Length: 85
Image (cartoon, rainbow, N blue to C red; front, top):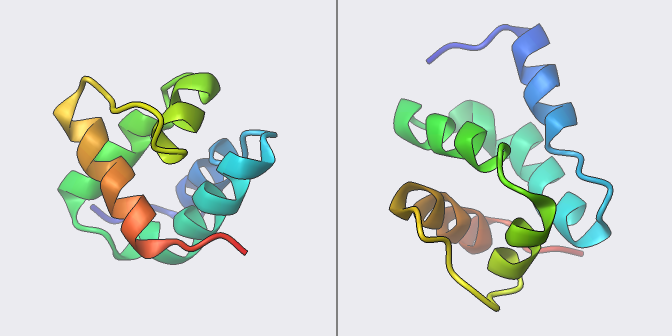
């Protein structure tokens, strides 16, 4: 799916969660990797952004797993590709 610059900016800013642990993963991912994803993974990422910050924190710190297999797939994808720091 082709997103406009305005839509990409919205996705990028929606990736900013205000929690450092999430921001260091999601913001670089949204800026650098999201535009290169296939349609399915782009939709998974947008679905992930609708989740609660506390849930995402638990998933990215690998303290729990998402029940939704689509969200679990994008969480794994992000963890494989973005190294904080």
